[in-house]
Amino acid sequence: MLNKGLAQYQQVNTHCGVEGASPHRLIQMLMEGVLQRLAEAKGAMQRNVIADKGEAIGKAITILSGLDDSLNKDIGGEMAANLDDLYGYMQRRLLEANLHNDEGIIDEVVGLMKTIKSGWDTIAPEVA
Image (cartoon, rainbow, N blue to C red; front, side):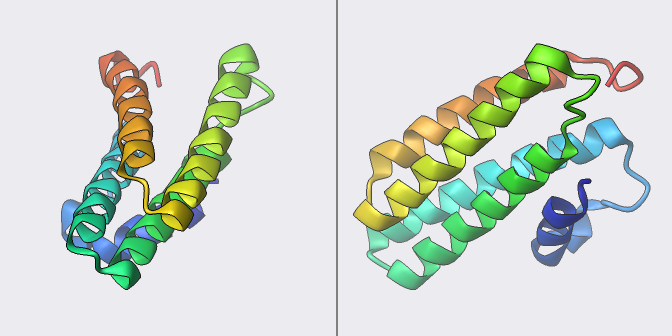
């Protein structure tokens, strides 16, 4: 489920303690990873370093895919379906941001991820 996103996250953040983290914390770490990669992508855009921009956006998309894969769509009902749609939308928008070098789209996706993460952070780990 989380394997693809976690593998991506582990490759770039092995010092963050993925091993032994609760499922709730793993999701938080994935969300943090998306935000970090988007900050890197925006910085690369501003410096006009196209390869770094593409790599950072690609990593963010992979982590979003991992978040999407972690959804239990059988039990999660409407909320899981809405998150599935939103993660897909964010991935498509990031492809557009990469294609058009559009910082505004990066900002849009950052805002969406921050909103999702804020909600997730308020959930007690034993409930998640």
